[in-house]
Image (tube, rainbow, N blue to C red; front, side, top):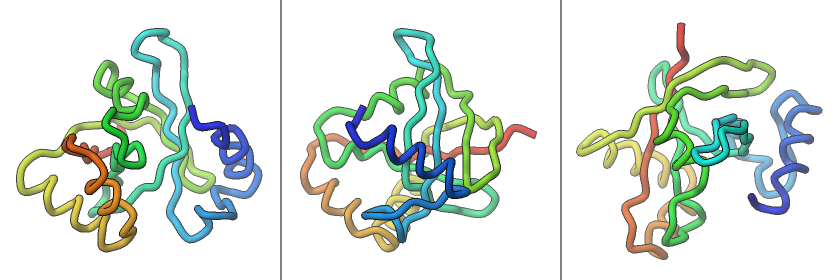
Length: 135
């Protein structure tokens, strides 16, 4: 876990989903996943984007050659809790593929060019996950 995550999580929850600093202009969500190895809940702040009724997240790991831990957790158990603003809900994550993934990744880069920089830093294909509320 990045050393700043606990502070971001606390600020997010204290301010109705808004944080300052480098994330001030981004849409931030908290994803609480179940650890793939530990079975324990793990909360991670992530930038999200909307596409219709769903949100989607990019498993960029800032351009690392390894996927982020939360991505591995969602592969093992795709059910999660999402916090957006003051709303918290249960959801399910699914990987996007093909043209849908390409379109969504391009949308993410158009909104946050840093994702394009992350893509240039790694040889891995950066996953794009659709997060849908469970009704």
